[in-house]
Length: 289
Image 1 (tube, rainbow, N blue to C red):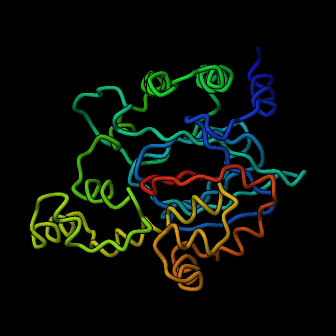
Image 2 (image 1 turned 45 degrees about the vertical axis):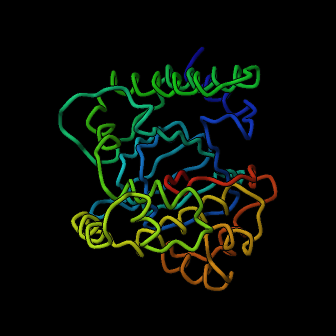
């Protein structure tokens, strides 16, 4: 099968809400977002429309349909999702958590975006998963194996340094793992200290060494979860605010605009009913767009 035929077949491939591997994002109007953080390496496939990246510094980068983008952990992206002439934008995103990455050994770490033409083997691995996943009674073990097959192919393509970004040990990740269990909870720094068995001064110092503070980290995780829920669920803005630990939708909307440069209402306006493809709670530790 030719590459163009394979890409076309993926457009026709149903994507179950609970497939576990691929998270699809759609819009029918331009969506612009700034400073979107990625805590884990992500592989993105653009199937319809164009992703317009604004790297800082650097020239704008426009990725049309058929391109793949590898995003290392620790990146922040500013971009516009631009629909095609039929008012359709579609991208598939696969997160690559550290536990599913193959042992990479020591070596350089690179946090630069890498874009390349769609790789037929990677496309086939995605398609096969969507075809077999509905038939599996317990897909978790095979899900990890499929992620590792994807990382192996990325290694063969020469992206080991980008993947290593997801294996670096940061104290902030331990904090994220605790608070992401329930971002609606009224987390206090003392709660996290107790869970991690460290003193408050130690926690603050370790986060400061990584250019974080507890409050800023918690706020970022909540807003990331909010962005995910707005894009992938049919929850109301008030329900999203509640799920992210905000007592009022107006406060959530204010913080959301400050962070991403658009309001929840504006983001939702760019979507249609068929865009809201999943009503689920995501971890908040990883953003995929």
